[in-house]
Image 1 (cartoon, rainbow, N blue to C red):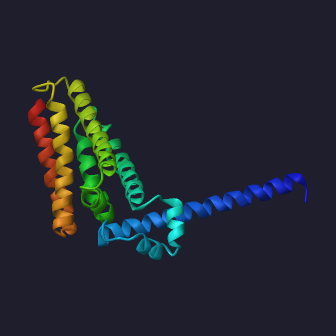
Image 2 (cartoon, rainbow, N blue to C red):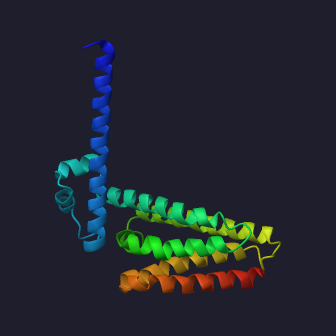
Image 3 (cartoon, helix red, strand yellow):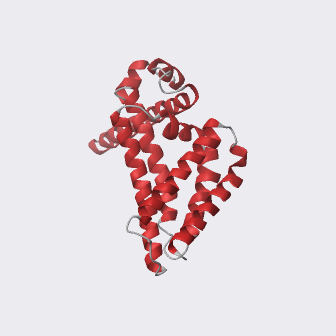
Length: 218
């Protein structure tokens, strides 16, 4: 075997090991997501996670420092996905309220029904945990609120509409994300009414859009 062939073989082997590591990482993460949502964060042990992942407990600890680390990694992943879906639509809301309608539709008709485990983790299981976990939750919502606030400001500027006060866009943004959170909690966690989310989402979005229109007189 030539030197170049040896190098290529080593490279392929390294790539295979990297794929295997990523697969194990994702398998453990998905098992944690399932268990945290179904059994609760505090009731889930690292042994249960290892069992569902079909790996040893030592392997779980090789990839994650502890159970809190698993929760944080899940939170960051969920936050990234949620912001990618909603933030993209909010950023399009430059000259109309269509971006707000699309964001609401995506949240209630796509994200919530397809990812009930993620709803449980970000809105229930991560609440009241350590300050580190809370800081990650805060960062997620701070970014989402900032996306909404900036969209409102751009919309007002492009429509040449005035806000009642310098706090209006921020208050509206916090209220909008608060509605998303509370409705998801109420209809998916407290009650199992996922089949009604389309109608619930439409009512919520109509309320939000009507409020925005009234406040900045579009």
